[in-house]
Length: 462
Image 1 (cartoon, rainbow, N blue to C red):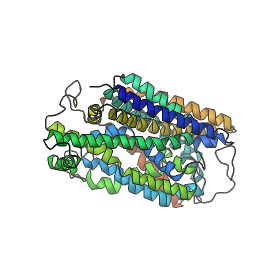
Image 2: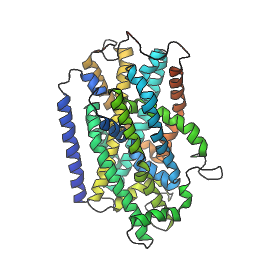
Image 3: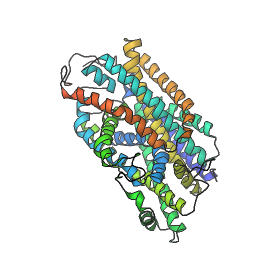
Image 4: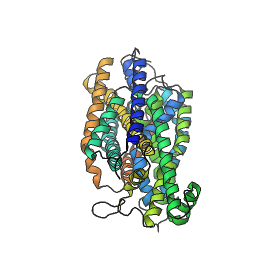
């Protein structure tokens, strides 16, 4: 039944109050900061390593993991986890080699990095590309998948879910990076707890339905027995899903480039570490790598469990759309509907936490790039702190509004997670190539220890 019980609403209300109260506390604590614009965009010197790591994961994990990745687990199997495990390995590379260069040169945005190495033209081109991808691919898909999930497990309409998530995320984002960073700690605890609860339900339900009682370990072994084809990590050319995840070439080629571009050259990700010292930033990134290893457990395994149960005649109606076509992205919402009262509220809060954290982090990055790399460069070169702050907040509101309007257009997708990976992947080679050239020292001067340049912030020079 697609509805929440009273106990579920109580759990969700407690979650909402705790997040709101903690966010207000952090906001008021930072309100006396003299560097308001810097605090809004980077929370410079304010985030601990565990806050950085938690924020990285909270912003990265969203509905595209809970819904989209479970859907891909249903359709493809464990192979989709390579995205996550390669990400963990890539984060180590970022911590050791990439983040020190950014911090040494006081980089605040990725377009600024290109402007230092090349020209404002190159910088602006990439700023515009990133803004378009963030708004029309990332924000849009997160809102769509989040609304799909919430409307699937509650009586709230799809359009109302879009509006509610957008407004909730705007409120969190307007508090700035410090509020986002510290509320993300709580968000990560909620989403991991809720994710593990749903995985436990999926495995025990599978064991029970196949006649072995509620045994989570038996459920895990049944996955391997009933769906051995879903445990191939590398697809060969004979596999029907080879075109979606083409074998070893993905791991050592395209996926590595995609991950380096995402985790090392992506404003949305590295922004959390740009305001910290090197030791804190490295610890935070490595902590995020550890947490990233857990994602397949809470996202992919439930999808595979639903595949096995569906093949055994269960959830036939729930897994198809109005036209009778099997929709893999229905796997996770169907599981959440099976949770008992109270626990369903925990899973609901976890899903909402993941969605809002991702939306807030993405919107803050959009705000940072637009304010510092577009507005300050071309519209108001002498912009004050107040002007940058106001511009940044309006950028949050407008970008979220655009994404909310476009989101319903994604209803035709079968696997939204693949949509995100494919369209972001179109730009990854370009981003990585610029990064490689900028670090190679083959043109102009190397990107090391500039002197006499002005910070993009009006209150600091170095």
